[in-house]
Image (cartoon, rainbow, N blue to C red; front, side, top):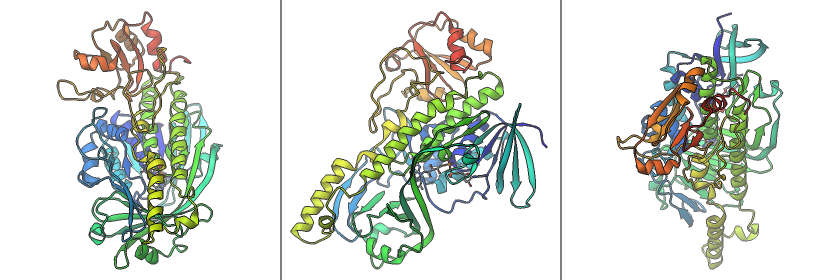
Length: 539
Ligand SMILES: Cc1cc2nc3c(=O)[nH]c(=O)nc-3n(C[C@H](O)[C@H](O)[C@H](O)COP(=O)(O)OP(=O)(O)OC[C@H]3O[C@@H](n4cnc5c(N)ncnc54)[C@H](O)[C@@H]3O)c2cc1C
């Protein structure tokens, strides 16, 4: 058996790769095992939200993600119609979505970049760190815990050889289909089946030249008989995903007449190349347990929900970023005994919110609020048809648009209840899905502002703790951090607008960019604060 490695990651999906990359960025040794060869054959997540793009910025890959993602000038429009050749019902423009121009709250806009292209960027990033080893066609089979962590049994699927890997921590980023969580005794809370889906991934160059709806990111087809399929643009050029759903019956590649559906919804003369078909089940679940000793779980392994809102992978990337610095702290020896306990306490409520919101979106996106017989007339070229189209438009604009702008979910999640965050007694700002108001309240993401030198304030965060000083006296913070080996940099900022945005003279920011503590004067016992934020005390 080889020497003990600090972290073994199970699963090379986006969450496992992001964790490997974050650990590599911090110089922490880790091995990632992935049972497949890393080829992605079917498109899943499409939207990399602003916060995930900020992580990519930190890792130095934001430009690469933009480069391989949907071009900035491709519209983010959502069109509702009966078919691409039929009448249009309504459209929603999303001007703030995508593009390169920065927003007041973030230097990174949401970017459409399907996992087909995003995951390889993460993989290339992780591969480039000498402390990261990625092993494909290697399956994690079992583990035994011991006083030093765990010993995993993995199998090289190319040779059939079994191998033992001793690791201090195992992080299972094994997705939603793996048996690993069950072997850990993890139970999923929620609805195991919300609906059944079939995705058809296909190639149709310049489809917009074959209809009058123009370029759009999503086309939702209002059609009772087919249970309202939708078409998603994947690359802004030629790749598309046509999706079907059913609330009661499992869908398979054989149960849907794809040629007939393409002819009906896209056009009778559209020629297409079918690349892959993927049946999947929409769930609404969160794991009861995220940590068992030195075994931790992240991503779809602990939260699964529908794609409406585009939260799944983004929430998983947030898990990876929350874990990255904490595992590094443990391995480097400055993390306290309670640090990893904070992981589920911080991330589970975030996952719960994503799952609840996505589930609500999935349910609200249905048209069963309208009488079905009447709805069947929606494509009629008649006064009744037009009346129904306006009725449907009304329903869409009033009930179905919430999940198209979600900056409040992307940037506004906070770790209010975390034991490693020091509350300052101020009231919690309201939680909004679409609106994000920056705040330096402990637990929140530290605000973005452009500094005189052109950098964003968020570019200051990442490697260790940062104490932002807007003209206060940092007191004993530096000495307290040094005493525990906690990496801390004090950064003075002499810019009144940024000082006003940050509200307090001293703001302590964690390596993941969340505020740990703030005040106008250094605390009398800076050691107690440092001990709390590094998980040294129970909190
Ligand atoms: C149609 C659809 C659309 C979506 N759209 C969005 C979106 O717009 N935005 C968004 O944020 N999310 C979206 N999602 C969700 C997103 O795809 C997932 O949340 C994301 O892929 C989860 O990443 P993960 O790394 O946790 O798991 P996965 O991507 O499932 O990866 C897990 C990996 O672990 C490997 N593995 C499992 N067991 C073992 C083992 N024993 N040994 C070795 N390897 C193992 C698997 O082979 C797999 O590669 C969508 C999902 C679907 C189905």
